[in-house]
Amino acid sequence: MRKATKNNLVTCGITLGFFVIFGILSMTGVLGSQLSGLLIPIGIYIILAISLNLTVGVLGELSLGHAGFMCVGAYVGGIFSIITQDTINPSWLRMILALVIGGLAAAIFGLLIGIPVLRLRGDYLAIVTLGFGEIVKAIANNIYIAMDKNGLHFSFAASITDIDAATKTDVTAGPLGMKAPQDTNLILVVVVLMICLVALMTFIDSRTGRACMAIRDNYIAAQSVGINVTKYRLIAFVVSAAIAGVAGVLYSHSITSLVSKKFDYNLSILILVFVVLGGLGSLRGSVIATIILYALPEIFRELGDYRMLIYAIVLILMMIFNNAPSFIMLRERIGASAPVQKIKSIFVRKKNTAGGAE
Amino acid sequence: MAENIKVAENTVPMLEVKSLSIQFGGLHAVDGLNMKIRKGQLYGLIGPNGAGKTTVFNMLTGVYKPTSGVIMLDGENITGKPAIVINRAGIARTFQNIRLFKNMSVLDNVKAGLHNHTKYTAIEGVLRLPRYFKEEKRTTEKAMELLKVFELDGEAEHLAANLPYGKQRKLEIARALATDPKLLLLDEPAAGMNPNETAELMQTIHFVRDSFDMTILLIEHDMKLVSGICEELTVLNFGQELAQGETSAVLNDPKVITAYLGE
Image (cartoon, each protein chain N blue to C red):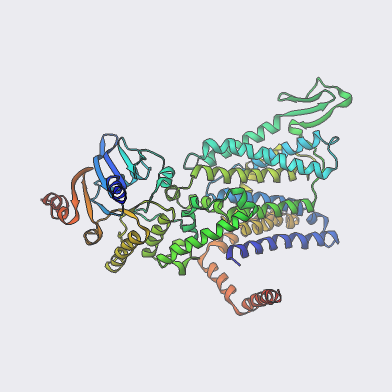
């Protein structure tokens, strides 16, 4: 088996294992309701982190507006679900359609931003995505949509007045946000997460992913071997945006009241922190960093403000653990040490005997 | 009939450059260069520092757009075309300061060079359709073949950045050859090499020319390498052609000696 394939399988195993173990713990009641409630957001944030890793780690472009794409997906998916709540049943079919539509909407925005910006070299993408995130948030904060028997009503001014009160349904009400149906559950999140994870792995480990990494490593050399630089940057960026949109749909269907304030600059930076600390280009790193860094402040909630102190210390430790030469050596030594090798050899032998039986 | 073909081969040069010029503001970096390279030739472009040699390469590969002049590759006009179009037309190059894909494996570097010869779409790759496996297998085999030629197959899984200097140079040539070019441009291939490595490089270049049936144009400062392998030379000085012709004749030209050593 190839090294890349093996690595990918381990990452899938870790991710799936985490959710299976903690899902069972939460079902049997061992895990408190507070911690059980973390599983869905962790899954959603992992999707966001791995999708951002495609832009930042594989393509080598800085994006500071990932929350903006999530916001597009959350609102478009949410609006779709509210409008079709009575017409499309069962709910799982509606949810799948919402995921597809939310992802497509985010992809279209990614394309619109990418076409002008990704032709340029430099930090323009960071600047433009930063602005995009704020613009999307502001629009979502000021849009009013309501529905009655005559159809949909839009307004950017204030709540909608000329509406048939008897059949009125609010879709989204500006700063008050919207209430999408609660169609997200843990199994759906894990299924979508695994699909996104595997799709990203196969994307990276293909001709397309190689082209993206070649562009990241050396723009001029990539052109000199005939790689269409703009095309592959665009493909990777749009895929990244689409997956963020899908995460947004899951998010808007998992909380009782969605407000646009959530999708601010801090959220984009938080996701970027997950990606950078997990290791650029490493999907497994993004998964693990997201689990640790998202769960940590919640676990230490009783400590009040001190928990941010612990958070900071963990951030620094992760930086050192990933980058300091002495730690890298220590990790290699642990990997080569007798007990670890013994455990590894057990797995290898198992596989060999299984292969022999076939 | 056979004679006709031979005549045709002789009359259409692999690369023909006619009065090629480029200006950066008021500076005439290259001024009215003419050059004709036959198929299978080993051709040298030399000159003192700042003579405009790399600028010529950048125009030939589409990094710069010439101000005037014509570039014909195997009878096809490629003047001012974008870099990827020129690569597909059949020019590949290496760089003076090595430009590898440093954080990718040695094998993946060559596979990236085979990009346009790996024929499956992004969607086929993500969904792992049969064509992905077929093409990926073929690409890997071809890349390994190329690595074997340059004796890099043992390091296929290493990161390109971890290779020693001489092997990085070889990998760059392997990657350029992966694009299946008609004309290979080598920009100072012996820069930073010791005499042993240079001698080995000369063998490699000869080998590439013979076994890949390649036409090679190279920029070099190492006179031992130039006189050892180049069949014809063009000497540039301050953007203008100083001398042209067979290697031994050019290198003994008093004008050339003056340009290099001073009065």
